[in-house]
Length: 277
Image (cartoon, rainbow, N blue to C red; front, side, top):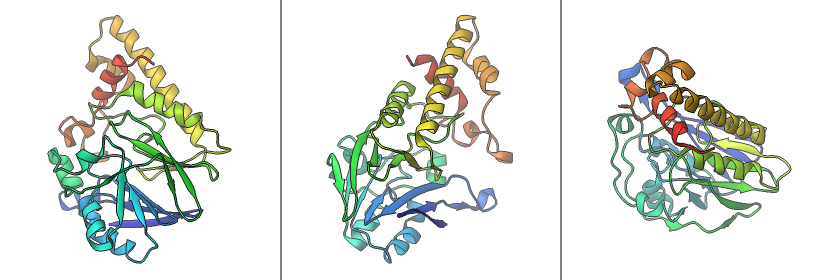
């Protein structure tokens, strides 16, 4: 399933697989963005045919993957084969995009296996006919993660760096200290405004305020978690005290249960305990 929205000169395409085992629900939406011939991310494998069919009617010249995760590169191969466009990614992401990834059961169910695709090294700047994008390195969610910023318009395509102001679950490999540094890097950009176009589909009109709120949340959570750890509480007890247990997906159960522990509140507590922020 895809859903199309428009914000100023930007077209947003939200994508997700309707899963029969969960009553035909889309468990997780992911967004790609098209602006002036530039495509930012390509969604997941399961929606690639529908997405590329939509793009065949658009003015598309090239694409950028904000990072190598399976829900951001799923239509890469089909785009190259059917439309012949060049795709760019950060140097650390390039070799990971050109291989079959190891996926957990939930990833295979929700997003599917992307086909290995040769992509090009991303330059420091990307120019379209009417806009100029700066590439900003924003590691933390994973290595090789980037944001694209159009300074004159104040647009920031932030990938998975920012999901919300108070996230309750993360993957075990996410680095909170790096995430905070990357968020601060975006806050400090010399633009009049900063609109965040997130891969979760949220468009934050006051991106600076949203990023600052998230940074403050992580810092406060880290301080409180370390204080409780010093008092002898376990990670599980700290999680329950500060986050109220594991985050849930409505009546479907907890994120931890659905993702084999890959998305969990316990991961977040472990991460903020490690972080020097």
